[in-house]
Length: 190
Image (tube, rainbow, N blue to C red; front, top):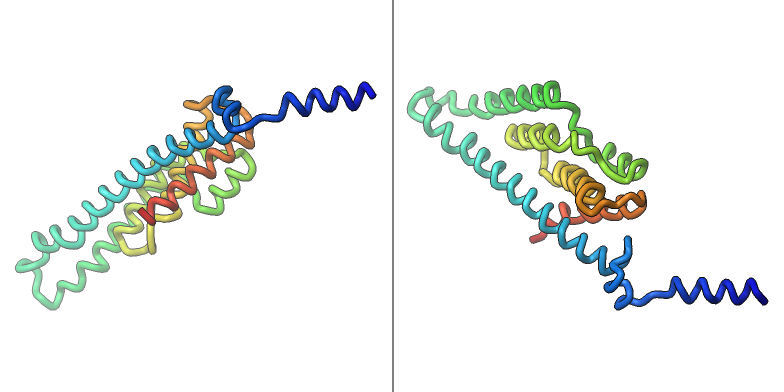
């Protein structure tokens, strides 16, 4: 009888509704998750915007403005096509140098492994991933920035979860990191 009464009292204490969760703002609750998802959406949206702005500026400059200044009316017309392998070579070299001197950027498999094991990805991969993926895209060696942005947003949201929102529970940090990864993917649809 006492064990049943104790179980009922404990069950009554843990029973909450959305209103109670909103008042207490409990860790991992739906109201907290909505606010956190909104914060990650804004942060990852800013990251995606900055990435695209830099990317499209450099894309326009390297493939349109620079050839008009350096190649057209300077090189013989038959040599115009040499601009493509020249840019690809320089971007490949810059990709390699960025990995060598900025550090290993990791890849999508590494990101998934980090989220699975540690619940977050280290922020030390943000700068190398940004530059190596940018140079790779500009040289035409990559199809798109989806995986780099997912990795960058995963590292950013994991950092925000641990430092700004002060989360210590590994499952909550993992959930927040996955929210950031989802926000990176949603940047391509809006």
